[in-house]
Length: 291
Image 1 (tube, helix red, strand yellow):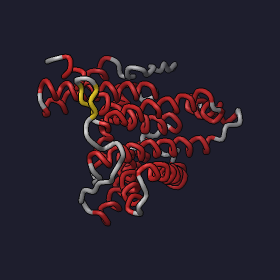
Image 2: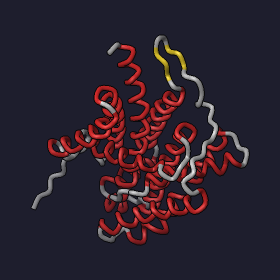
Image 3: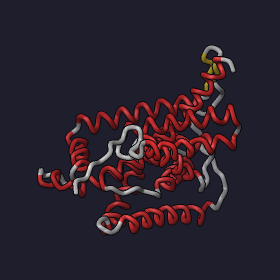
Image 4: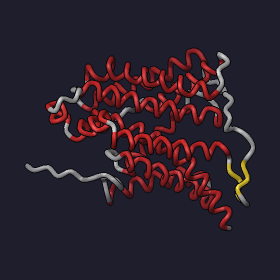
């Protein structure tokens, strides 16, 4: 295998891993804020893609569709948290898991009622002929995936590191009772976390829709997002990004060396091995509880 092929595979792996990283981030955000894993996140990705399809059908260009979808997703996420999650947030964890699964099933069923299982597409400026980079050939969509992830992650770290509300969200994730005593509005933090999470999910749908098409099964990649989040450490935003990129590289190289079947086995094998050796993930911290 030549260096050109190795680099070509690396670019492909990083682009796929960027998508997994964004989904992983979307899962970690509400978990850090409220301790809830949103198993409807895959359907949020699907929701973003279909909302883009509706807006594109009105004649809007892709660059105008993007902000409208993100705003719509933020409102949708806030409504889910306020109407469906907050009233039962103190219920057993199993109840919360079932509720998020139910939300996902409802979203998918509602989509199928109108669009069935047909596949649709929308135009985007990054869909076109491969770009020549020396001897490498780079799909423009791959470059957009990587750049979008870098910009998104940088914006999130700046938000949590420097903004007052971002610091309030971090404080709530560490100790909600202490944050409340310091005057942080916990309800607003929970709503914001879900809004950010659904925006990220819908953004993934926007990125995927012009490339792979729009159908009700886009959301199946939540499994890879979960793996990315667990590999990185479910309590770490940076860990979710690293986990997603590693997962994309692992899949790509495994598929190139051993075939498509083995490609789907490697990530889950690595996940099981990591859980056996380091259950808290690569960037997670183990908790010590005194009894």
